[in-house]
Image 1 (tube, rainbow, N blue to C red):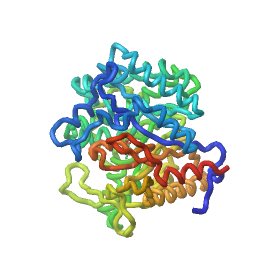
Image 2: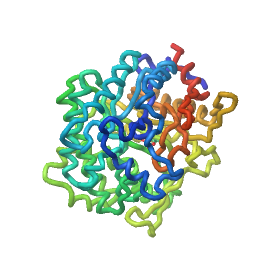
Image 3: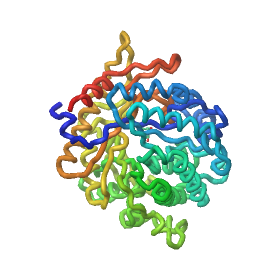
Image 4: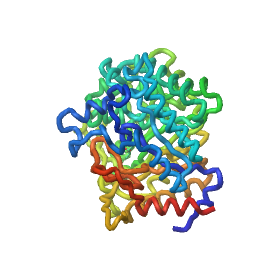
Length: 445
Ligand code: FCB
C-alpha cells in the first residue's frame, strides 16, 4: 500500500454505513409498525438461511456499544437509516414518539462521541401498510414520502446536517418490483416502471423538503453503480452494454440531474411515458449537494435476444481470474475507478462513496478474524478512489459497507460484510483485521 490518509486531504470524510432493518432488530418494540421486510422474510423460503431481521445485531439496544466501536476505529462519520414504520407505524398519520426517541438518543450519542451522523431517509423498509396500498407502484407514495421526510427533518434536522434521501433506487425497484427477489416480491414491468418513476420523483421531492426544513443541510442521494463492459467489440454486445448501463447506472441519476430518461440507449423505456404527468420532468430535478456513489462489482454484458426487454444478460468479470468474494463477485478494484470516471460527465458538485465493501467467509480463530480478503479489497478499492480523486474529481468521502456483520437481505446472515464480526447467538463483537487496519490508517495524519 503506497498511500496514506494524508493523500486524501484534511477535509475528506471517512465513515462507515449501516441500515435500519439490517442491524436494529427490535422489530415490534415500542410501537414500531411492520415493514415489507418483516413480512417478506416470513413468506416461504425467501431468505436463503431462513432467517429474518427480528433481532439482527440488536443495535436498538446496543447502539452505545456500537458507536463506541466506531469511535475506537477512528471513523468520524456514521451513516445509518431511519426505519419508516418505527416512526410512522402506518406510514402516514400518527407519529410513534418512542421510535423518534430511539433515533434522538442514538444521534445524541454520536454527537457526544464526536461522530457526525449521516441520515439516510429510505433504505428499503417501506411500511407494510403503504405496500398494501400499492407501495412504490402507486403515485400517492410521493405524498406519503413527503410527509415522512417532513417528519424526519422536523425531528432530527436540528442536529443532523448530512442527509441522503434514498439508498439505491435500482435495488429496491428492480429487485423488489421487477424480479420479485427482494421485498415486496412483486414482478413485471407494470410494477417496475411506475416504481422507477415514483422513486425518481421522491428523490427530488425529498431533497426539496430537506432544503426547506434544514437550511444548512448537505443533501445527497445514493445510487448503485457498476462499471459495464461489452463482452466483445461486436456491435450487438456494445448495444447490449449500453442497455445494461442504462438499467444499472443511468436510470436514477439522469432524471434527477434534469437529463430525462435515457430512452435513446434503451428504447424500451418509452413505456415509462405512461406514468409521467405534465411537469414531472421539472419535478424530478433537484440540485443535490453531493451524489452518493455505491460500488461493489463490475459487469460484462452479452447480447441475448431471449432475455425479456433487456435482451442482454450480465456476468461478473471472470476473465482475469481474480479472487472472488463470498457472493461470487470478482475483486476488480479498477472497476470503482472506471465508474467514478463515468460520473465525470455529469454536472455533479461532489461525489461521496457512500458504500463499498465485500463479503468473505470469515472465521474466528483464537478470538481474532484474519479477513485478508476484505483487507485487500478495501485497500485496493480505496487506492482506486484516490486515483480518480488525484485526476481532479471532487470526491469528498468514503464510507465502508459495513460496520458489522448483519442481515444481508436475501442472503440472511450468511453474507458477512462487516469490519467487525458479530456472533449472532451471543451478540459478541470482534474487530476484524480489516477494522484494525482502518483504525491504524485513520490514525495517521
Ligand atoms: C447494497 C445495499 C446494502 C448492502 C450492500 C451489500 O446494495 O445498499 O444494504 O446490502 O449492498
